[in-house]
Amino acid sequence: MKVFSLAALFLAMSASADPQYVIHYAQYQSAERGVEISKVLGSIQQKGYQNQPVFSRDGSRLLWTAQAGTGPMATDIHWLLVSEGGAGKALRATPFGEFSATPVPGSDTDYSVVRVEADGTQRLWQINSQTEQLLYPELKGVGYHVWGSDQDLLLFLLEDSTGPNRAVYRNKDGELTTLSGHIGRALLYQANSDRFFFTAPRPGQPADSPLWLWRYQAGGKKADALLPMPANGQDLAITSQGTVLVSAGKYVFQLSGDHWLPWADLSKQCDGKVSRFKLNPVQPVLAFVCEQEG
Image (cartoon, rainbow, N blue to C red; front, side, top):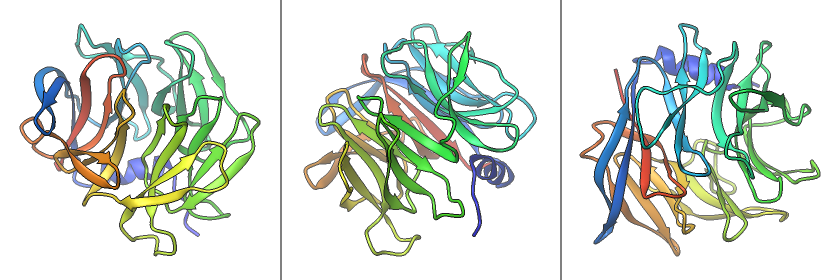
């Protein structure tokens, strides 16, 4: 069985047509159908990989994964102040590869990241500008993660000898519940319902089948497949009111009952596709990655 890792995925991306990444962050306002961009506050355009934007819990900072050297895994978490912009700087420069910065519940300065360690092991670390510590040493093969409200996590665990990449819930006591295999990269937590969301093929379908949106009630026994994702739908995000959003091409759709409805048209700001996006939890500000083939 072939084993995948963030390192392997990054190498594959680096070798294929040298995609170009631009991170835009912009104010938005309500429109007749969803929202529209009212002002682009800034854009981050540097050489190499830069992706996975996220805002700090207080909304003041924008963070992202940025290539920080010539090596394929030379990535750090960079940040800037939303109100000031600029090129940004490293939160914590390390000799390892860090991805997927996620605010740690209860802190405005600490972030959990996936670190690719010297031997290729991928585990969760907690970092800030001054300190770092390993979280859950026994938990290996982490690709992505999202926190719940009770020290619990939904994890994307990478394919290994025991099975394909999979969605795994970890409760505060460390108990693991596998929810689905062959999942997509996007994980989401909806605080007002204590539910998690992820994407995976419909139950019983082949691994390469179209993705569906799945929902999992924290602490439950199983997850439920809700509805198909929009065509080319990949990344998930959530509004401060708890509305689930998905990006597909140049557009963002919102979940309304059992339907996807238009939420934002980003075609004026993005010539390529919106690969990832996040909403500021405090301000009406949207960060999104515009990815173009080289």
